[in-house]
Image 1 (spheres, helix red, strand yellow):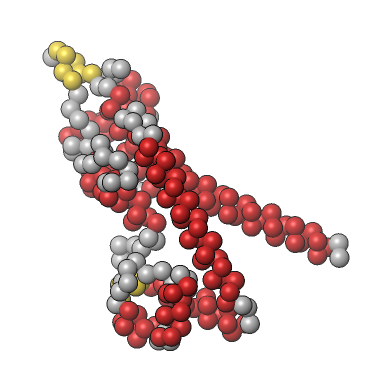
Image 2: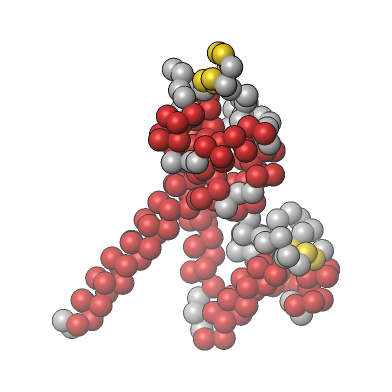
Length: 225
């Protein structure tokens, strides 16, 4: 289907000036020129504008992030790392100004017991970015486990929490594979919205709502005992 730029503006809510800027920046393909000062756009323009808008508004991606991702937009979600890189950066919870440590530096800097760290690594409670790449966020789990031990709460609870989190990550990977299997040029943006909304909105909703329901039930039972 072909569109005038005014129709793209109406369908996406993105201003004309922004659409033209995306074209100049190479984020959108050139429009088809049918005569002097008359250009038409197609479904690819519409889909990509929606994708760019979503990535900016929902994920906080920069133009540079999106440019890198769009270089491989025609490859599957499963095989193109650059397409999922914005997602990976968000999931890692690592900010641009994060401090990085080798394992030895991490132990020294945070005064971590080596045996405890090795146990937490083995149990999947502490999850560094790689085998020898730790950040400040990893230290928060050390402190949490330490707090558990100080007040006498069983460590097995947080270990089991990590086990369930790992199982959920496998379900999320399965979801990604199924999205890859149905990908077409026309549903490109919708698939990304499904993935991001599941990981960053539905997960929070489901987890917190079940926690709310469980705590509410406990409060009611305590009230009537």
